[in-house]
Length: 116
Length: 492
Image (cartoon, rainbow over all chains, first blue to last red; front, top):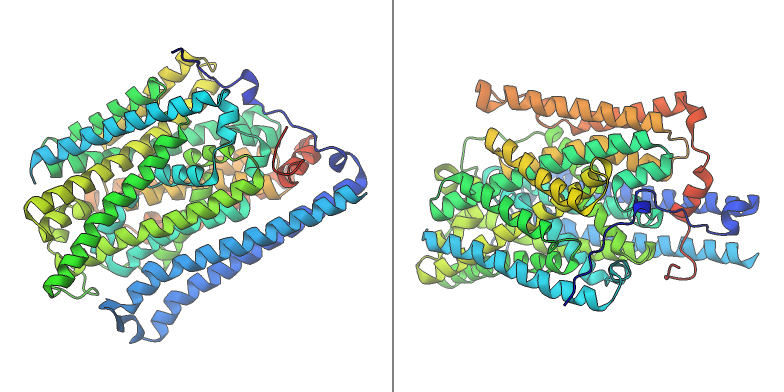
């Protein structure tokens, strides 16, 4: 059994920039690229802001309704359930929505860039 | 605890890691070219591997220990560790994969077309890696001392030796398989004992000895500033961790990089339920552990304390094995990525250079670990996140989304953030509770809330002042970062 050692090629220090064809050469192509970047950034910022607002709302809710944190569900205080388990579905849902929208943005770009 | 349990668990994990590594090597050999193989890794495997590398001593031991000490305030740690991946997904995952860069220094060099930026980034990456390895070794020292009664240094040295052997032998290099196995091992090692404990307590109808809300020690609760600053560190720190980013290259394209991150989020969400359960169970049924032993040992001691007997010993062995899996996987992941950076930038990129660099990467933090006293594990890892968030994160975010970034701006920003945050860490260590007996000021204990904005501000201002240095390759690079691969999903 021989072992083949695989090392990074010397060029790995500078990954080659593959061309993405007409998109980067023509002015029209660049218009599409810029609008894609803008819409992806806007999407990311909206999702991040929405998530942070919900995250902030959780402790505020516990702080404003003093009895709420101590309500017990199956022996576990509600405050613990909310912060210890309740936030994770929100994170997952935000990620899922973002991915759907980001892929849609890219599909739209592809249609525009390839229709010409 | 029976010392044989601890030693047996450590040996079993090391052997299992070696066996899985060998099996994984054979698989990657059959697919021919290693790079081709690495690009066809399925998202599930890749996500498990990211989880395996990411869940360190801080997650496995530290989170439960902090929850025992500070209650719901400490729940922000697992939330931040997980939500950091959401930020990584939103702002970094797909563009970083599309950049074609293997490491963070590769990325900054390509984006800004400058060797100087590469060197500064490499320096920062090495500092981050070393700072991150130290708490892993502290965790190993604690585990060995608690479980076997041997002196602490044995634990750190044993982890460094196993990591050096596997990395230098090539067994751990880029083997997605081993890291993926470690994730599932860690999850099992945490989940089985706590589920057993909960079922047993429910069956006995045991009464809690303390309320979940009462603090077992006289520790003051953290204020809103500290919680917010911690969240800033964790949310922005994750997207600059060198050993995590290197894994994104094994995705075939940008869209699968996103899919992988979504699975990682699921895996982390499930995992963090268990340290939280340990912390809560510790508060309600064994609050004495907060005073008697180190709180970080809660996860290790709880099964023995609440179950006892041979069943307790078996469960303890499982937890100890999981803990060592955490130290080994995170440390080897960091050593591999550090060795890659050091050997390419300092030693010329040869195989001998890689091995030498791996030895350096593992032994320098061992020295740090001996010199420093371990703080709470989750806390000291949180400070590493603050450092990453103040240095690598602004360079990545602005590099990906802002055309105006220049090499001078990136260097100035990274140095500013590094000096401010590093200075706060050093000052905190010198004037902290251990040195002066008083609590340190909050802005020093948790610096991210001001060092991260400072780094961003300096990066933007200096880039504005050096507009003529915007690289000529800008259009090409930005197009590559953000446009989907052609043809669909397969490159080349």
